[in-house]
Image (cartoon, rainbow, N blue to C red; front, side):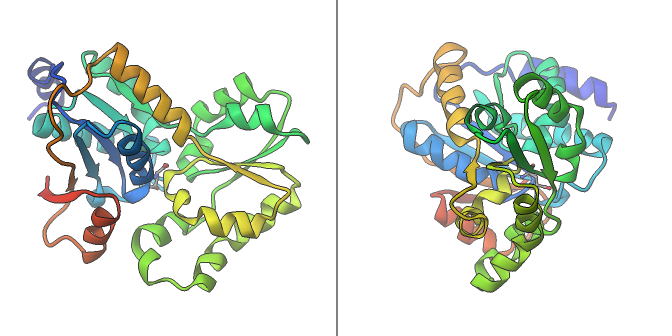
Length: 282
Ligand code: DGL
């Protein structure tokens, strides 16, 4: 099927302004789930759907063109399947690459993006030295350059990719030992300390799962910052200004995955941790 045609038909069939429709979250893996948790705590009457793009994980090592194609495909399937009233792109890599395009393709659906919290970090830093931990794709993107130019022109910004951390969280978190969790962070911690940053931005949603280990490894002098509060507040604003709250009782929250069955056991564990029911493979 021609990509442009399918997009056009989706656009017209997907206009969904019904308050009972779910708020959807999207990520390459489990990284967006802590963002969903924030939303569930603050907007408990909404219905939520999470699409986990397991078939295309990880995004961070792919080219811009690859990530764009994958995200557009995943989001179009999500729209057809659940008719979300809002979509949270709970992935920094997907947001910097695809948010603008998605807003153009689906003007009737409000999108909330997740980008590295450079602005609050620049406001808080005393030494004017900030670390940004994110995937290679995010670190290289002009979107991040622009965030830094706009909000942190007076700061030295150290970009740290932390190779292997995303895969570790997605695939090994539950069977990992504390030593393994510290050791996967070692290189990043070393660089951030050597470069004497005093604020570290968690610019990849997967890194939130190792927040405690990072805090301990970096020490008290260095503060960690992520975008959960900012994204959550933006979601509340969008819900009340561009969409409408769920007028009925809550039905339940679902996790869909891309790829093929069977779904690995760990995803059932993640689903339970975040109060989701595994609803199937898209
Ligand atoms: N969780 C994603 C992010 O926030 C990316 C992980 C991946 O590389 O797939 O950037």
